[in-house]
Length: 209
Image 1 (tube, rainbow, N blue to C red):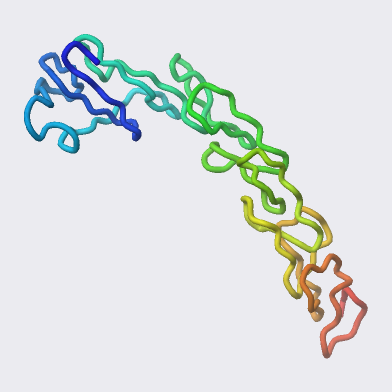
Image 2 (image 1 turned 90 degrees about the vertical axis):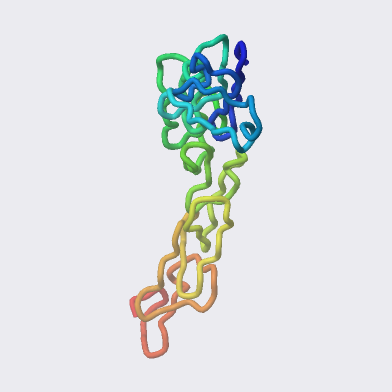
């Protein structure tokens, strides 16, 4: 609060200021006072964009001291997904791939669990394709077993390879199709030798047919 004016920081990083404005202290670019008459508060009070923080930073506090302009009185902090000291001359730097930072402030970025990747603009981690688990909660990511796959990033469970496919290795994002002229009639096959020649074709298990 200032001498005869007050400012509030909103959740969307805009501000609303009201009171006397004879020195332009409301930061509106004029000297019109607000909040002294009916229909000048609440939804009728315009919100202002508060500029001045470095890229990757956001306003976390404002000051309305004395008769000074509120636009020059701010406290910045690095957003989630960025690290650094926004309150100094240093800028906020995005978390590197494989690291994350979920909160606002100057904390360093934390390494994602093994077999997890950075998601949500550096704010969280998720298990990579071929691995399952809840990396956002700090859990480890477990490789899909042979005969199963997971093609997307996230906490989804691994799925058995569909009919006509197989995978022999753990941690696979995709299953391999049986060789031409062959197929497998069950799900979850773990070897190419599970593929047998179709009707009208001849050859050893696993092809070629």
